[in-house]
Image 1 (cartoon, protein in one colour):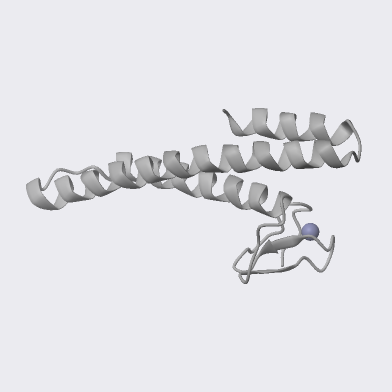
Image 2 (tube, protein in one colour; image 1 turned 180 degrees about the vertical axis):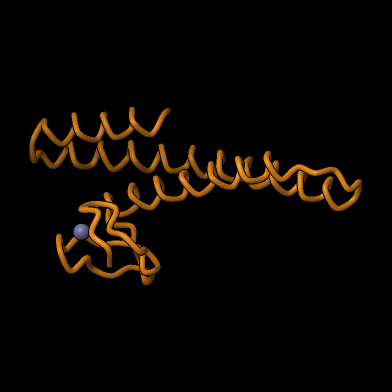
Length: 118
Ligand SMILES: [Zn+2]
């Protein structure tokens, strides 16, 4: 599932308005999406590890491929953080955005919700 599809699904469910059952179904959807994204992330890390290994072992220059993988990983991680926040899964590593009040990752430089620099 693409992230934009997930967002769409979330928006659709949210617009179906404040029903508790909807909330629970929505959370389940997000959890499912997060699990999928986590395995995508693990795969990307594995690919990256192999590339690094190859670079060092054989002196191949894989830096273009490596940067491409790293930016994929970064954007996936950001997407996952947004989804985690959506379902209130921000345990110790979160704080409140001073502008919109939503829970954001502790190390975030910008609020993923309102875009303000934190
Ligand atoms: Zn904010």
